[in-house]
Length: 253
Image 1 (cartoon, rainbow, N blue to C red):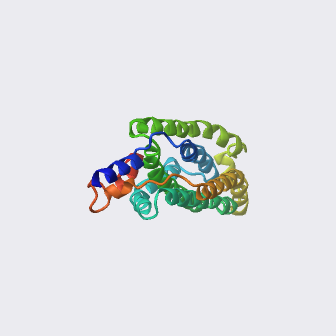
Image 2: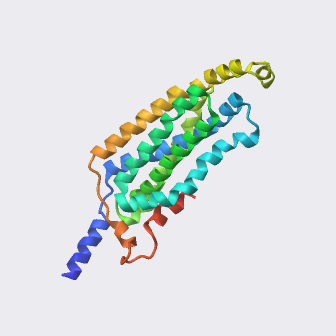
Image 3: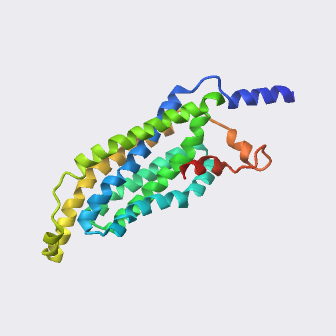
């Protein structure tokens, strides 16, 4: 009886073929977070020109974004252990959408702190998505091809980082910014109006991104994806001493 149970468990945890539908959805997620991460490189010069930031202040954009990886990695691992991979991915997408939507009031009020807050929330969702999607992809098929599946997903991630600058450059950096000397001659009211006009270029792109993320969240929530029980190996009494968070959160660093 024990031998039969062990063989059934091994078959469940090591599928004979990769689940193509689930793998396709996962590659879209990898693409999205690569795309959004690379958009920061477009935001830095844009916000630097709008708010007349020095280089140290401009680097707060990257600091706010990537510090979220450190802060939210372990909580995301706990969320995966609590709710499972599918629900963690859905939650990550919803959090990302909330961060993208926060760009709208940030642009309307031309508030640099609000932009940073939006980036923190966006990165928190991306962190949750990475922690859940990375180990999920490795377990969507035979163990022998796990590395190949992860490499394929990472290729779509790289594709997202490749096209993001073209997308951001066309839609966000299209407006001509005034020189620092010209900005100094503006009154306080005129400067605020100028900043709001320049910041408005991020509203449409990030609104579209937010809607796309919400559609993905709904689609993943409705589609029946293969379930995995391999995280139970990492829980108290399991065969491995490593915590479940470590399997997904450590690769993002």
